[in-house]
Length: 124
Image (cartoon, rainbow, N blue to C red):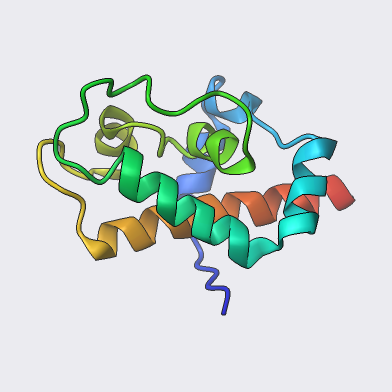
């Protein structure tokens, strides 16, 4: 079951950022999403967040999320969910503590909402 929440204020702020607003999915990303399905992409997002962002200490924080190679990576940069510093700055999620399940859910929801917004933009 896909959960889609309204995060209009966040997306408005992100759209005003020159850096964040330059990220967009490409044709190959949409092909991958269509091939795998949104539920699989959501599971990939959970996996990436749990491995790369959830631990309280990340040795390479700020460099753990590639800039390309998977739609979730692109979405993470677009939504400022790419590292703990950005999570703190944009989402007020504190650094230095393990992410709890509610925080992980929030991050994945933001990523998936951005991907779905990109799909709508791409189709228009």
